[in-house]
Amino acid sequence: MVSVSSYFDCIVNILSFDFCLLLENDSELHLITKQTERLSGECIDYFRVDPMVLADHWLINGGIYYWEGTKSIVKLKIEQMFCDLPFIFIGIRSKHCELSRPFSMTSKSFYGWAADCPADVCLNGMSEKGYGGFHGILEGDLIELGINSQEHKLELDIKCRTPNKHFEISIDLQYCPFPWQIHLNMYHGEDCVRVIL
Image (tube, rainbow, N blue to C red; front, side):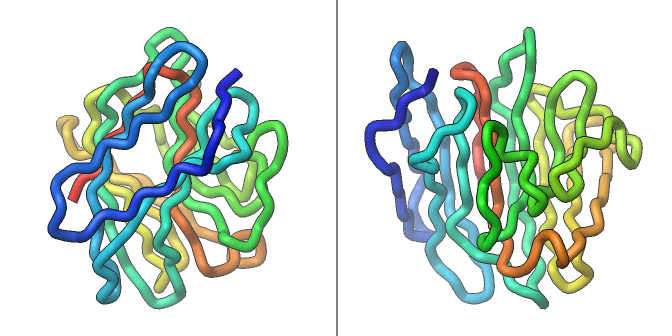
């Protein structure tokens, strides 16, 4: 069981280099590397680990809220992923919706993609295997998460494969009202996701 003794919060200026946040559990250190993104004139961003850890995994929420009429791309690299039973979730949630127990992905406001076997797409808290042709995320993948609140959709582009892969999810505002925030789940201690500018 992962234990979090305090609320981790880091704020980094847009001009800063990578910021490494080490999260300690009972046996080892987890590394999350962070750079800021610019959105609608904002010059700082942060990611925080939720003090309520559910079902042995880390919940990581973005600090910027995405409102209707904005478009943004967040770039991620899957640096390391536990190979025996991979599980990393990349997506969004509504700021206003409570996290479900024992797994946050079952909350109706969750939309996104999970690197697991078989590959899951999460649509308002429901798992859809292989939705839209999605086959999963691999270690080493460079990902662009497109948050398009103008058209109420989420896009995932995997850039390092030939050919590049593109996936889309339409967001139902009844289940996922604005503002949205990025949400990552990292289940294993070996998992590492880099957020890049």
